[in-house]
Image 1: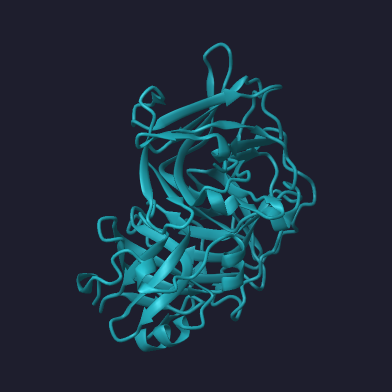
Image 2: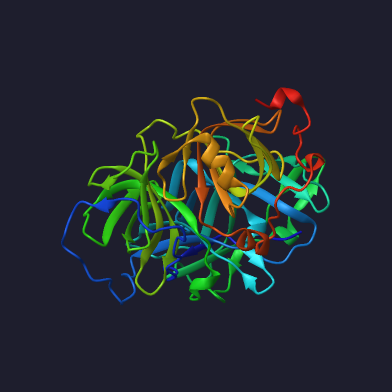
Amino acid sequence: MNVKKFILTLAGCALLYGCSGGGSSSSVSTATPAPIPTTTPADSVTRVFVTDNPETEHQQFWTRVFKVEALDDNGGARTLFDDPRGRVFDLKTLRDAQGNRFAFLGQATVEDRTATRLRVHLEDRFVAMPVGSNVGVELRGADDLGRDAQAHVEIEFELPGGLDDNVVVDFDLANFTIAGGTVRPVLRLAAHTGLDDVARHEVEDTAGVVSNLTANSFTLTGNGGSVVVSLSASTVIYAINGAAGATLQNGLPVEVEGRFDTASGRLIAQTVKIEDGAAGEAEAELQGVPGLIDAAAKTFAMTASRADNFQPAASNVQVATTNSTVFLSNAGVSIGAADFFAQLATAGSVEVRGAYDPATNRLTADRVKLDAVEAEAEVEHGVEAPQTPADVPGADDPANHG
């Protein structure tokens, strides 16, 4: 079984992943540019990433991370990451033919680096999709594993030498034990090979509130800690409701899609989505390659490459839109349903948000957005577009359309 390396690191990943399709759709409401630092961050900042090792039994393996702590021999615990909503990962996306890939989780300021163990809190639900099957197998943590007050599974492992600037945690999927509907995850400290290569880092979504806004940067503060975000002419800034001319301001809740730069210690923004406050925080969000498009019924299927707030029950998810669904272009501007479905046929990727029903494997979308990520990039990471209705559980059920 393949192990997703869950990487805690004090470094970042520097790749400006440009958004094809027209650049920014809005502006930043300030005029004082700030230079991007070239030095690494202070030693007291620990950044958290995830990664994986080779494994051949599954095509997807979903897990959700809620909290990461550094423990000492005196019973002390220092929090490195804490998000009540959790961060969802398909461990299989974090490894390719060239080696480990890394996804940014969050960062924290840690004054005392004395630690002997790490403790990771996971949702007591894992979804494993064996090779050759698009239907997930739901697993629970082994009965004898520790649980926290929220009933999350706790996994501990040794941290020789204490906290470092780069702490790489390996979800050792190849050594997970699965039996009788339960799983015993194995986590360990891993080497940093490839961590300083921008191209080895995944584009990830990081949510928070804007502060210290300048023409080319701002501070993003959320459950994953505070991080400086770099903006460029290719960064797409848009509002979740599709309104034209959306403008960043201090105090706004946003979700940044981008890669982390280890050299500057900044998150390089591909897109910045201005959120609608608490509304939608618990909704399911999914990104993937579209297929099985039915413009008349206003439905399509998509393979899941990234998910937030839920773990898909199958690799291919049926998406239904309604008369109240907001359709967005790849620049984040509201467009008509007919235009959306016409462009969807050639879209490399699509993002959806709404209510997910695991029993029918159906997501009823209140927002759908064409994405600039090319389909080839998704396939490279082991995600392929749905080809036939049989690939999509529930796609051939008339009750799941319309």
